[in-house]
Image (cartoon, rainbow, N blue to C red):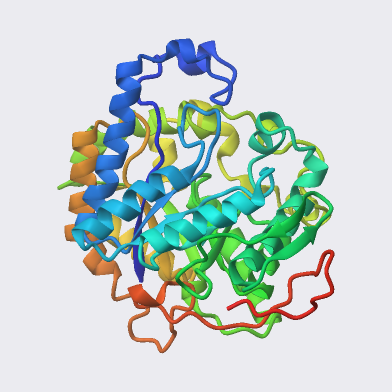
Length: 427
């Protein structure tokens, strides 16, 4: 089992009655912010990730969310660059995993390819690259991309990024959404092709795409993994079986919010109010009409939603959810090391999960408690989980070779656009 540290960069000082006074965490007036506390929030976020790197986590994960108070992360490559340099300097062999750049919204796909390549060089071949389609409000409202274009723009930009990494010669690109007389990025990645991961919410189209292109698939358990896991993961493994692929658990990543203390009661006392802050003033304060803007979900996704609306779990209740409700739904796993390890081991074993993304800093949690949570998890929980899948012969094909992975060299042919080269190798 690979265990990574996932963090978002929330502003930790929103007013107590935020969810009553404001419609959304996506259009929060910046007048609420104390600049000194913004600096403190950002500095603490970076310090906590370095605590994770020094505590033995396999990778550090950050996401991209523009114009939002719950994750102040307009470009994760900035933070990933700082982490790449700092960990290289300290000799910490940890993956750098932006989860990452949203290709459905970007107007500069070549810049994304170039930034990721630079991260791979700076980290000495430790980049694990994430490419989400993107949330509706961020794609359409923040970046002006019509929702009907998001999926097509994503797929075209992904082809362009992969070719920009692999084609040894300059080439022109004449796509539907972007055109370049020349693409010739400097640098190229150190790895022949950095491992690629796509985060999805259960859309079978996205799942199948990860299988067809040999990417890893991530699922976030924010909506309550006890409610949604039994729907999402069996769907994914059924597609794996239909595709004739091995049921390798390392092709799946799962993100879980986790709170660890010496006892179950102590975990409740320490973390309850901060978990409620995270969900009520974070994801719970993103109205559903901003996440699912009409036109942004393809037909396969719509069929899945209509056939099985349970995929959204407790999303509609998050804005007023109590700590007890969050724990009951599995949106948060909290307790002593024994309690937390037992629940995580059972869940990951049942759903064949080979990569656990542990979210150990959340909401308004003070940095001292975040550090305690990270260190106690690393010392008392992670060792109990690492043995999962260790008795199997599965190799980790979605992980950098420098970090013990066994990347597969594949030959793929992204759709040619304007030139006449119909064959290329994507390693």
